[in-house]
Length: 161
Image (cartoon, rainbow, N blue to C red; front, side):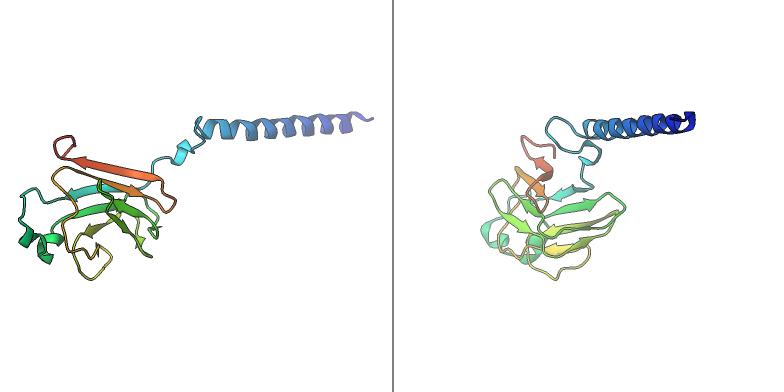
């Protein structure tokens, strides 16, 4: 075998071994023990603000649509790329759930999810409910279309607000 052919084979072997080691090391560096990708573990879609009714409305006012629409949860896309929220859910501690229909949230923008009735726009969507959802002490949980928890916000006596 000539020296040139032996050199080429040695270089090819070293390059192939380097590629195999690099491929084997990548998943170990990118994933933790639970298998989740840590480079992208924090979603760009989060709960950014909550306006709940802490004034203790009576039952008659509870049905007033304007009052219901003054309570909302704001969902924000902190990333640059738009995200389709179809199938994402927003729930409270009692199990009330709002499921997003086909709704595209632009990058670096937000949408308020109001409790009452109204006409959906790019910045406001409505649950079409007739009763208050968010209590003085509650938790809002945002899940993606696979049911993974993306963010939670708790307020009241045991919460942060």
